[in-house]
Length: 238
Image (tube, rainbow, N blue to C red; front, side):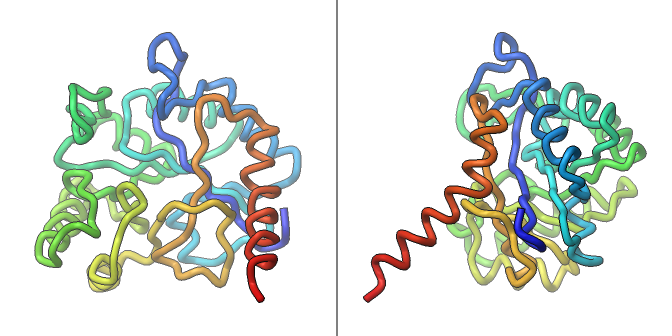
């Protein structure tokens, strides 16, 4: 890893493929292999909210979208056994129900008791809006409700989210203004490279990892692909 370049990895569900399927899923053994890769290289694991306090020289951040039951029951114990902590982003109106925003029943989402227990064990519980709305398609007032209602739901339960995860990685200038006004210092989007200390703190890129992504693919997504994209962009410039 380049000094100061910080991979922020984006996961979703975590469990055996015969239970969770392959889409948006990483098996616990593969997740542990990712974590051990960074541990062997002396990386500092930080939760996303801690980036508001400073940027580590050799850091890595693991994030889990949506707050699936499988994340709390499979991913977090696998990481905890290695002394690693991560961030999970919850859709507050859906806590304890299912991820039904893309149609169908959706996979089950963790309840408040599990989320609060994870918080007590030093995992970060962050904000992912109230309903998993695509923010750049909404007017500012609706966006404000999505953000503030979610933040209030978390704060009422003793959680003080320091980071926000943009659903689908989508946002606009109104989203950023609302987050700033609400005092949220860190925002996570999607990207195809590690985050840099020069990136806007409310628009930090994350690298999405999927079922088949072993350590070799992790290296490709984290190191080689950004260089290939940079070289391709330079070749296209006159």
